[in-house]
Amino acid sequence: MEQDDCYENVTETKYDCLLFDVDDTLYPLSSGLSTECTKNIREYMISKLGVEEEKVPEMCAELYKEYGTTMAGLRAVGHDFDYDDYHSFVHGRLPYDWLKTDHTLKNLLHTVPIRKVIFSNGNEAHVATVLSRLGLEDCFEDIICFETLNPSKSSEEPENSCDAPELPKTPIICKPFENAFEQAFKIAGINPHKTLFFDDSIRNLQTAKSIGLHTVWVGSSSKTQGVDYSLESIHNMKEALPELWEGDVDKADVPYSGKAAIEAVV
Image (tube, rainbow, N blue to C red; front, side, top):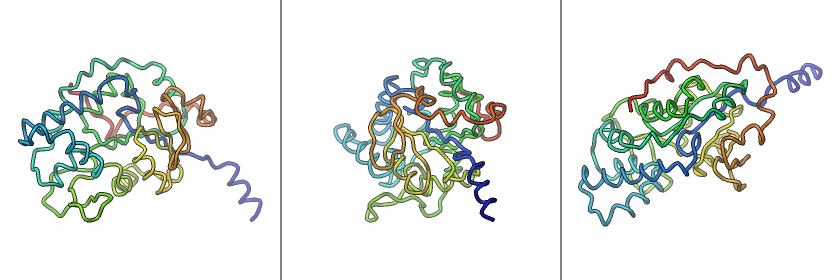
């Protein structure tokens, strides 16, 4: 019995899934897309929802802080809008041509012999377009995105909550909340205890760590609670985590299929 246990400990791999955020993770914050996205969100609040312009910056920041995304916060405080219209306005007008094919990252992802999955709060079209612009369409086995976690605009009671229980709930499920992670695990068949999660958001990483994932903070060289590794750039993956490449290279090229087969529309 002791010999069998020892054998299992030696042969068992530490990770069987690499879980990746998209925005400001697969490409750097310096790309400028995040700034443009914030501008579009604020413009949507003014032009589509009638929020007073002078109140928008503070409101936008507060809702993002409490609800994970401004969109989730807007629904929580009573704004009713079409999700597709919101995403079209906020993401559909982004300057995606600012992103270029990332041959270095593509090679890293293709050669690491571990299953790779996307986990983003972004919508399908946005995620697909970013992957297309970066040349990473065939690097991931599955995609968990906004539509995956929020398949329809339901009239049921809201399921997601924020950190402060006295605040109103939102019907939108998204990171950094535990139920978003739990749904992602169920949908994609992920074992959190054998998963390495890459994200630029410390809140997302801290939630992930609290429920058993190993975490990588992308875009930072700092170490803090909830972070196992820090990478100034996603390109530093192999330098910081060489053990990920110590496996069967024949398994590296995972087909881009299933839920991940989403065509770019922008």
